[in-house]
Length: 253
Image 1: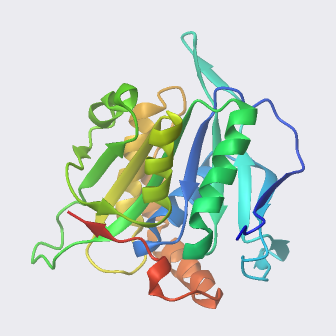
Image 2 (image 1 turned 90 degrees about the vertical axis):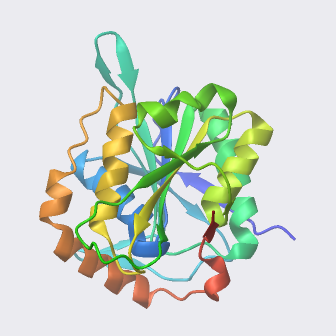
Image 3 (image 1 turned 90 degrees about the horizontal axis):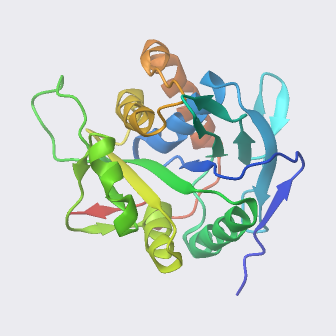
């Protein structure tokens, strides 16, 4: 059964060669924090939304302005020393229903093919065993969908995810990306418990910064605003209707 997922792009931009970055409010809200930070820090423009009958019937109001719960943003092309980068961000204020995840991923890939995107990055958090060292920095793991994109793991200075199971949106993006020969990088940051973790999100931003050399992504402002941002996103997420916990990505390995 189709979930009738559509992309409504109301602002036309030349997105050929762009990197598509996805952020969903999974464990630690890491993906959501990453996506919101990139949109705000780079002052990206909203270009459309992703919609479906299966998505929550809500409006997320920020600064008095109603927003669709799954939005698309894009910036202008940034060039340096003859090389260029451009990013498109998907920001979602809810975890997509598990039954809609595959349709959502296929819809994104089909749209991305029409736009001529070059690569895809997803960022999420995963919980680890309790550790007495609370000051220890989060480790970021990486896995790619194709042989040609494996070098991104060393370029991003992350630890290879060698064995295990990745569920949810990131898992489907990786497996479908491999079938379609699309370059997808999944970044997974450790969080100590399932509470908003801007510090883990900052480690993913540092990794993305190492890949998109022409775009300056300084995570320091995120760390400075960590407490207020975590509180705001936690409040929004708690107000969004959810499925069962089966929709939350699981990582085994």
